[in-house]
Image 1 (spheres, rainbow, N blue to C red):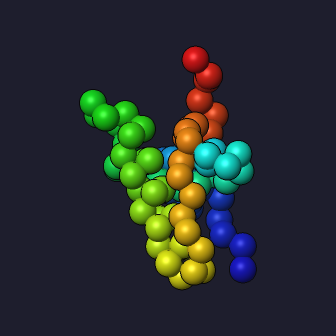
Image 2 (image 1 turned 90 degrees about the vertical axis):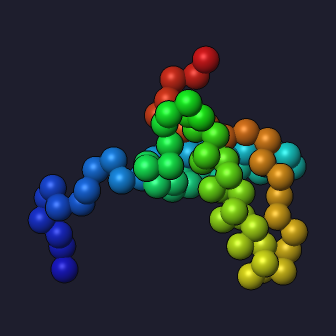
Length: 78
């Protein structure tokens, strides 16, 4: 059943593209917005995504990849 327009809360998550050391990329990884901001900026997103990757690696039996960089989706590049 379709939802009524405007019923999804906006700004609940921030989205990040993650590039790993082997050159692979995962797009639109969701991070709760309440973790971000303040003096640390987007650094808590890296820790949150690293923890997600660790859990996924445990379930799949593969080693977790090291994150090279993260970029917020829609942010202007420096």
